[in-house]
Image (cartoon, rainbow, N blue to C red):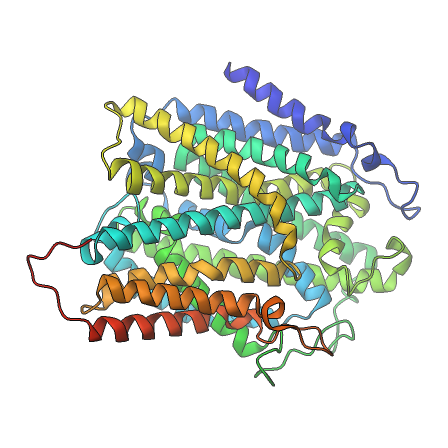
Length: 536
């Protein structure tokens, strides 16, 4: 049975190009275009098979849900840090950063300035508090101070957030793969199915240990693929002549301070947005907290977070250089682009196209494997984390726990498979969110990331917080995030620039400010509860 699953998965990935005949049809492509070869698809298939084999191996070692969800709490912090990076950025970074640097400009890299502050806040303020309480689900911490209703609110918001996040990642990956294959978007559901199938199989079998190990493999492939593209462009160009000496005409205006709220990207906006996102994700997202809990203590968790930030700096700078290099390459070789594709309007598609049509055979397969890997690293982590929350915060909390640990692990695996199936279905709705990859991910991720973190802020750092006040803050903060994220469709875009009235960069800062201020005011105005009054 195990070997049958392994072979079927490899066969499914291997046959994907054969059921997409347009993938190898270069008749309408430029003369130098090649597309993916059978060698490339063998590499992709072997990678998918190896991840499932790893899941089968670790599944035989697990005897309880503690090992399944947190790896018994003694995992290597360096491995955890790499896994954190692969999970939280993954396909988003792999696709959005080269496209952003190519089509919009490199100002987003100024977000790296905020990393020292982020490390201090998370490493020395949040982690010591969190690591004093060993929990499987982060939302167990909410019930102790604010009652069951806030715990369920946090768990519910997280489940919705991660389902949307994973669906978006799978959709973006499938869309990029369709560009690589030279096929229409009608094939995206099949590509989604292939990616989701492999990720869900090995995740549901192996638990957090296999998730962390495969994340490390996927991060290595992801970075190696980007590095190969950078080296190839530099070699073909005959040096580093692709590096711009001034502000490129293809880039938007990206000032330090915004002239008005609609300015798409600014230096200050980038710094504030990434600061709030990292702190909120590290302090409120189960995917992060679960990994911190898999280390031994606060010091080890801090090392894991430092590793995450260091890897992020290296990879993000490399991906930014990839975008700039591709801009220089195709500007010097415009005939290499297919008719109708422009460096400005199709910036997000340039990177995946170069991978499939300009890298040598075999190398393309490695980078496509990295693309699949990037998506799977977010699927596996999200599925495992949602499973932990559902099992701990809903089933176990309300007395639905099976009578044996063996059944408990089996339930967890079945639930993980069902969650993965929901992600595959949800990905079909992601094309309805307007904007390029960077804008779309910010509009979805920041809607619920900051409200979840604010629940923990009230529970751990506001002694006078009350459940009713926290509920009011969450509602107001989430409403603020929605109004900013979809300000264009709601209030109308700018008639000349076509931009939203308020940039997506202000979603997180504004949502946190409104959430905490309204929640604190309402909590302060409400009467204090007596010590013997039960929380709900």
